[in-house]
Length: 441
Image (cartoon, rainbow, N blue to C red; front, side, top):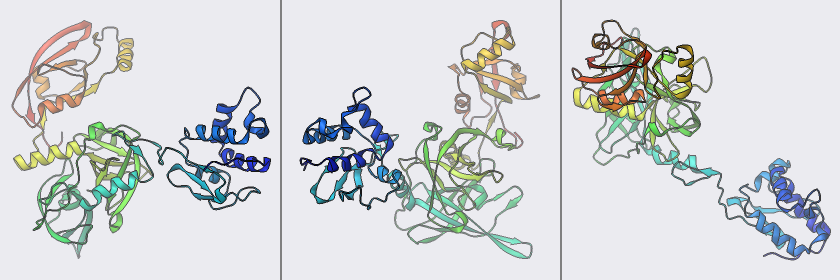
């Protein structure tokens, strides 16, 4: 209930509450002030009850949690304020209630700070809720590595159930091996609810670092929802789940630093595709665990970190992981069509610079520049040259490298029509036939 205030000290005490947050104070000063003189700081200029009603109307528009006022003033939420013994009782859900029935300031907001990807408000529990959705599907994996000289080693990592039939996605280096090291031991899978299963490595691809593990259960198992990594944006909140250093059911949080960090930028040879870069902590044991968005959907598979720096970790995009898994199920291996070219996406800024450097550069608004053609490759045999700009591939206008990759899919030995633009605006129509990529490509 709103009551009349009859003492100057009472109004001053309320003013302390409203203005101890610099932002809130500035807001009220701006909204209620008139020129250099602000009647809010002269309580007797207006009938007190009228003033309090106006404060209430303005306060409803604020999105600040009242707790920030006390923190910024160096007071705990339970401390008393001023000489009027006004003490906050509840600071939950954007509302502050005060003892003695003096005043109750409420807000229509419910701890709302921003909007999520689905338009839902982001609250203090958004990250916890997203993690809780996927947590039952996150598994801890241990692998007996077999005889490693004098000792039998054991490795550990994480994984995520993507189907109720027990299909698990994880990293190949967790369950299959890495480099020249091949694991031949048993795979044990532990769920968050305490159940353990014997796991079978169904298939794996060392190049993409993806493996599929299967466990058998008489009852359906929890499965995580899959999102799309192509919808990610730099700066978006993400969550990493897993078992770092054998610490199961761990949650770390960060943002997307880069949505498409290419393996070549990281100095990785023979690695196809790109990675999601994040500053979320991904440590030994996190490998194979899911990277989530705030909707609790899997958008990546955690895979590695940079040891020379903090906050530089990487995950395999879930779209890539699913394609690899589908090929493993279909062919038992991953088939990668090869053209033998390097590709660079063009935008207006890059085009302007290229045209300044070379007036003969083709007059195009978009396309894919070919900076290099591998000798002896299908592209070279087809007549594609370094400096060509691909504008159409298989009859489709091209602006992104992913378009060409999607068109190629897993098809080898197929011929495609390619339209390129060259210096002095010359155009050429060529036919290129794909080959399967060798390991070093």
